[in-house]
Image 1 (cartoon, one colour):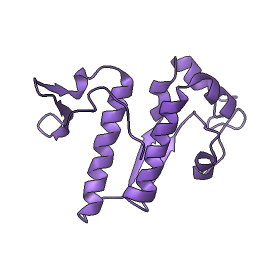
Image 2 (cartoon, helix red, strand yellow):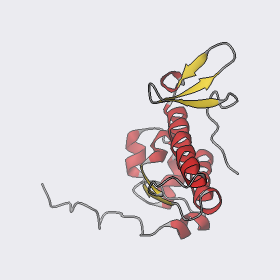
Image 3 (cartoon, helix red, strand yellow):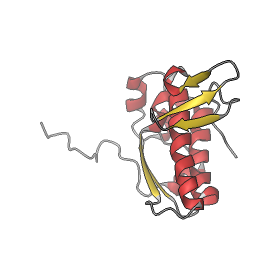
Image 4 (tube, helix red, strand yellow):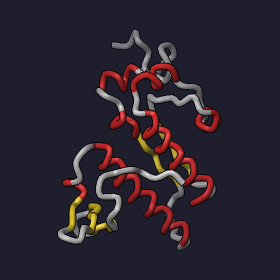
Length: 157
């Protein structure tokens, strides 16, 4: 099963409810998520915590909705915000600019969560990146929006 390759991933993590954050328990001192470094680490720990909470709820029949909306999770894997927005839903631009190994691993992890960990769980991901893998294309419920069409028409002020 794919996993995140975040810094501090060798250490146990816990949800510190008093401060609503993830803490990584290193032997010498605990490290709060805010001190884990780059955006890729923050994404890994945020998503891991959210998915773990949903897995716990599912395994314990907790009455919470079985869905999660994630907006633009791959943004941390692009060299710049400009490159991310220029990906524009096309496979070619995604292939050219993203850290594809990390992006693929992220989406494999999300897909496996809905297929194996919590079957029937619904993940809604809004995203510019578009991967050419068939399993990714099969997961799309709508074709990527390129210009045109777009959510907001270009002629709007």
